Image (cartoon, rainbow, N blue to C red):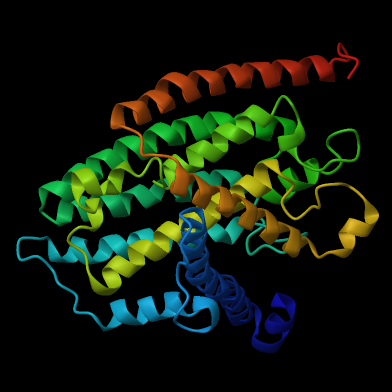
Amino acid sequence: MTAWFQGLLGAGWGWFIATLILILLIALPLMLAVAMIIYVDRKIWAAMALRRGPNVVGPFGLLQSFADGLKVFLKETIIPSSANRGLFLIAPIITFTVALLAWAVIPFGAGVVLANINVGLLYLLAVSSLGVYGIIIAGWASNSKYPFYSALRAAAQMVSYEVSIGFILIPVVLWAGTFNLSGIVEAQRAHIFATINGFGFNPLLFPLAVMFLISAMAETARAPFDLTEAESELVAGYQTEYSSMSFALFWLGEYGNVLLMCGMNAVLFWGGWLPPIDWAPLYAVPGIIWFFIKIFAFFFVFSWVKATVPRFRYDQLMRLGWKIFLPISLIWVFLVSGYLMLKTQGMLPW
């Protein structure tokens, strides 16, 4: 498509128009997916609490998220008189924008990616770490004690689990031999017994997949790690002083990040767009369908945990990140690198 537009409009404008179209093809369906995934989230919680959930607006309640979006859009944006007006308004925009930026390097299928860069994994780590700035700015700019406490918690929590995530991903990079996300997915083809696709099925990498899933919940501040919004302690945390579309942007950013972490789980450990088994008939199903199925499966786990697991205390949250995940991930780096070194030297029979 890019070549066609460049032939029609010239190299510069052709590339710009083609890239803009590709961005819209990712961003617009993502916004629709976020709206529907909020509905799915509420339905899963309701089912686990033996109640109905959204069921009035539209068939089966499918339009509930759009009704909620219209409601917040029509509400008045209230800015506290003592808040820093500029930072107060830009904080939710940062959170929402960063949630979209990361999708530029996520491969939806073989060759189906906006930016197939060689350092895609490093780009993801860099962009995902920026999301905390929106929360910190919101907490400080509100000039209220509850949002400020929430911002301090968010900074400590997200930094803590980003360290663990970094060490968890090193063995994946070592095994795949590349930072390119498409290359990481291809390295998982026929990984186990020459038939099973996915690093997660490898006994040496499975513990890392579990730790990455739990760390992803902490990184997105989802229950049981939602200490930044603990209503019993901080009202609504950094969102306390927000209303109207500013509040909605935080919600969209949060669910966009949750979907991103579900996609990262699928890409890094469970074969991305590849079917679970390297069997020719399964490849008849388009890769993007397999990818979406895996994202939904992980989102179900996120919702399941939120509906059933009580919130951690803050000291438990910090202890899990620094005293459990960090040492284990460091040990696993040595284990995997040692195994790969011995295997490369031909000193292991398997």
